[in-house]
Length: 100
Image (tube, rainbow, N blue to C red; front, side, top):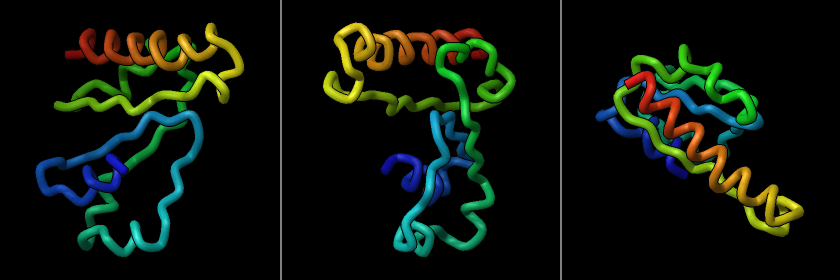
């Protein structure tokens, strides 16, 4: 899981996850974090329909990773699948580019 690797990495001073729902760590993941490293992690529950309104959350970060995706079956339709796998990802990338 990317978030776990970022938290464990000394290369990142802070890790902010923009999520559709709260992220829960397993006990094994929790024990794998170096002491104090979990303090650099925060999560923000966002509405991806309004991702452009979260510039204050993204501002000041030096890297961005997007792991948002679904399956056509879970999405329920080709249109819903495209919204998550393309539109939301493009909107996030556009936001990141705008805030620098």
